Amino acid sequence: MSNIPPLLFAALLSTTLISAGAAFAADQPAPDQQKITPQGTAADKAFGKVSSDAANGFQDVMLTRIAIFNGHTAEA
Image (cartoon, rainbow, N blue to C red; front, side, top):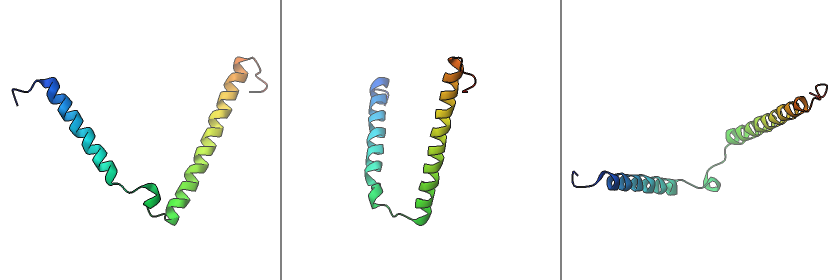
């Protein structure tokens, strides 16, 4: 191993790790092949609601900041 330049060794190592990751990902079942459980669908709905609430909250904060910046403190 002492005859291999460090840069070449790093390139080979990173290529090996990336290839191994791709091979592992190929072995995983596709989302449409996975079993859908009632717990999974309930969790998906709950996460969707939280995501929607969070998006609305961020939008409210953004609109409040714009109103304050424009001097419309009554709207904020």
